[in-house]
Length: 293
Image (cartoon, rainbow, N blue to C red; front, side):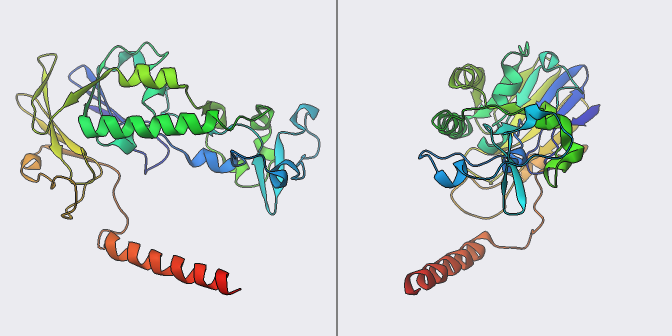
């Protein structure tokens, strides 16, 4: 068995599992940290953004002029935002046999993997995951298309060593890509086969895959991958809280030979309900101060 991590963002799980000559992709998380390096998009033209001073390092190619804007202590790229898709150097996406999607937040990079790569495998997800993932993907594409940028910046990627932090610390910016179009979204989602909890899925007669409720959100799953002699559990975003999703299925995870865990929280004892209450109180106090001033 071989396991590769294809994401530089620990909050966006994306792994490749090769087991008995079958290559599986566990989630297709899209890292959006790169977007923080670009000027924000606006439906309404902003004079403030248009009039930001241009940043130009010393002794660089004149073609770089106009690509970078300075705002306070930060330098931003004046271009449509680019995203960091799953790394495609470790494995050929055309060789992937199966993609397992755990929840709607872990499928945002699916069009990057399935479209234009020669991918011919199968994609499995529950119906709520598919429908909510579709809404998020369509909203992302529509928003970017409705806020076009006049220029596309690319020269700055060749001068990282001369740019200020955090641009200088960007992770493989030459691998970043602009967002896909709505046609790619529809084509990619048409490949998804909907499955139900505890449904046994045969994978080429060699493996059996079972989705089990993870309790994280509507339609979220942990995946149980088993053969005649081994049982592998892929533990994705999970929650033991009793809320609107179906409760987490603990029994399906028992007696596993291997656990693959990802998307783990750094605050396991924090209650999100109380944290949300604190947030609302802070927002209320802030708005009250603004009104009074």
